[in-house]
View: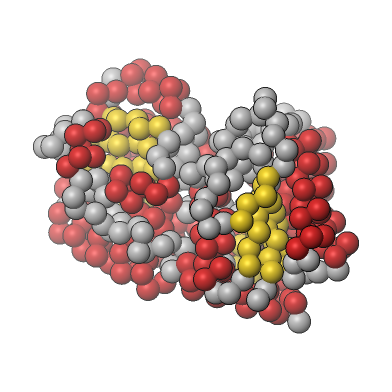
Length: 389
């Protein structure tokens, strides 16, 4: 049995994309015979069946949403000590660091234990900080963080990436040797995420209009996920067809986008649910006729698409490399960062019932065939074995 210490510098579990990857990887690896222990922050919720070790409680820090914070300096210091104490007790065979901070912490533990370090990279550290406006106008700090990112990238024995675009970025921008990079896409549990039909109770609970087509979005509500473009596209969609309603699910910034919708005069055409429990996500997604995933990043994976596909949802996305890598010719592509184009693709897809029926079956079939978490877990186990040897 391979013993794996996962380091997750985040409030695991908090019903969002990064956490879904950590959780589903851990479940798949356990099914494949690995013993997984996750060290993480004090907040978040425990998941049955996942051995989770937390730092001491920090009562004033309750943030669950994604994004950089200066609080992470002391949180990650505490996580380093928690991970080291846990590692000395468990004596793991592999150190598996999620995100750049997890790889940074893992580097020291791997050196002390003389074990391989796997870096689970979901995107650029400085890229994320720019997306969250954390580096705006501060060139010296940006240069410093870029240098740190490069050192972290080159400290791991192997890097698994959530997209080939991230792998290319690591090689070309951060000088990581290709023989240490293993592109490992996200996956989906197609037994849990599947089309549901008995949804009357949920329709009543959400007050969904029975005579309208439903467009769903489930994910973080922020600018870099493209939610601003989505909200701005809604008046353009309704100008063409009033028989459309939007179900926007996720957090944070719900009030911000409610106010934006009110300002555009479309608040009555949108239901904002706030955070949705991951276990309930398949039923909520099944309310949709189509889904939208307007993330704008050209490298970072767009993990929500896998769940949409497994639920049989034809999906409209911006034309980016990560989205094309997942959907291939089964995606409906809008021009990047263009609300007019996004609105047109949504309107055209809802008007074409034959296309929706065809895509619904094909995306579901592709999810089952190509994106099983057990298949992804098998790839990761092979990386473990190669580096351990």
